[in-house]
Amino acid sequence: MTSRLSRRGFLGAPALAAAAPRRPNIVFIIADDLRHDALSATGHPFARTPNIDRIAREGALFENFFCTTPLCSPSRASFLTGRYAHHHRIINNDKIGHDFVSHTLVTWPRLLREAGYETAFIGKWHMGPDDSRRPGFDHWISFRGQGLFIDPVVNENGVSRQLTGYMTDYLNQEAVRFLTRKRSRPFVLYLSHKAVHFPYLPARRHENLYAGRKPVYPSESPGDLEGKPALTRRVPEVDRLRLEGAVPEPAEPRRGRGRERDAVALDQLRCLASVDEGAGMILDALRRLGALDDTVVIFTSDNGYLLGEHGQFDQKRWAYEESIRIPFLLRYPRLVKAGTRVPGMTLNIDVAPAMLGFAGVDWPEPFDGRDFRPLLEGTSAPWREDFLAEYFAEKAGLRTPDWQAVRTASWKYIHYPGLNGMDELYHLASDPRELSNRIADPSAADHLAALRRRLRTLARSR
Image (cartoon, rainbow, N blue to C red; front, side, top):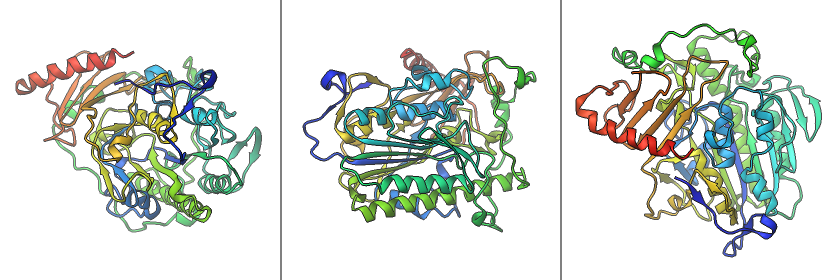
């Protein structure tokens, strides 16, 4: 569904809504590849995330928040623009051309800067290999591609710097440094972490955190993979180094930490510990400044992650719940009561219109997302009953084909446009783990027909 903020400002710039006497600051923290249930607040059995949990405890936890494309670059662009990937054109992680496209994006921090905010971007941009400043940011710290966990090179406002130390600590410190500047304007801080992305290298102080703990993985189901022919089909090998239009990005080594499932799962949580420490540093800095309750503080992730579900480990590109469902926590006591739970299906494309709404800024161009603030206020306003998710195959990773999916509260239909006879249908109400593909079940035929019609309608917005 497309939403629109209606009034124009002077010479086309965003206009401040007359009914907004106080414009809040905004701190937006986004992790990388963090699945919905990786936090203590969202049900992890032993992860310790007290500072991130505090955002939910003193604010709102969105129980059904999703990304519309479960991949770094498209999801990050959707968070910033309020548009689907097929509209903002950052459709995958293939690098060629995305740096140029991402310089043209009209992002909500860019619009808030035009409306008088001071803005900062700190961290992973990852839309093309270019690490130069994008429009809309007074303060810019980023790095090429994925960057490095250990001793990274960063671009600080146009100056290349070789650092010594741990990337997450540096980003946290720079975030606090920005917050504590003297200023007379409201601010936006967009803190975009590399953690907990591969190669999952924790800070030295966290290398043995959770020692002796055993991650719990989903049990296998005999009929699961049989119902997923798109996932299990054979695909030809590809010489990634010779692919036109793609630049495979060599990964930083694991430094001997192992690639078995337990090592990876625990190291993700160890990386998260540094992110959590940074959230605590930010909350404490805001408190010291007397600005904590005047600041919208958000924590989220760009996409989920498969840790063994459907035979997929260290993967995220599929339409399954573990890939598209992500954490989203928001603290703003001037609007949100402590301990609020938001059950409605909310999306990363809803963030841009909501942030403009918090700031009282109007923008006449359409969004694909919707302002979610009425859900925080406990109103009974109608909300979405379904949504479109999508993925565009990458030149450097053809295992996952193009797909489109429509998800409702009870059902999910996954369509593979380039593959015949491989679609999937799941009744989430009775099969939340998506183990039984009911595409050929006669008793589900009416639901399938309705979902196919709905998918055609949602996809027609292109």
